[in-house]
Image (cartoon, rainbow over all chains, first blue to last red; front, side, top):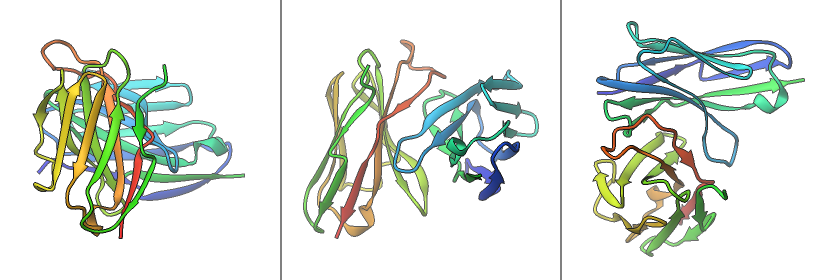
Length: 112
Length: 118
């Protein structure tokens, strides 16, 4: 069964600190991997999308890495801000790319 | 662009009633997706359309659920009859795919409809 597992389940960090969120997947065949940010009460918003041939992609203070061999990805947040408090969801697309399998998300809270 | 538009934003209904959720995708997008999000199961794909044609409805939980896309700018998700376990946030998303429907293009999510069935 295609699965996407994320860790940790939740995380609290101080404003200004860095953090790294993890994602392991078993989706096969695999087309792409995405990281979404979901604020409370809103729809998910894309942060990065990588194909299997890409190892890293950045979007401002967000940097995603992908190891297609080990089927692992990480999302690194640099110099966290209070507005980074949200759920971060790892999403893997199947071969066609349209059918997405979602992880349960990591709830990040940044406090001052 | 206004983004993906969903209505209503909140819906409270009694068990057994029919519920219709509506979605207007981003203009020019040719793929539309319906998702359901619950605390227990997270986000799940229910169905998606490519060029108004349903491509994969394997995520639709049962026959009580149906979705239509009569044209490129409108889609509905209907639940009849509704049950308390249908309570969730329902998201619509759209994207621009290539002609073959193979894509890694971005999906843009609407704000969601929070459905409560009592």
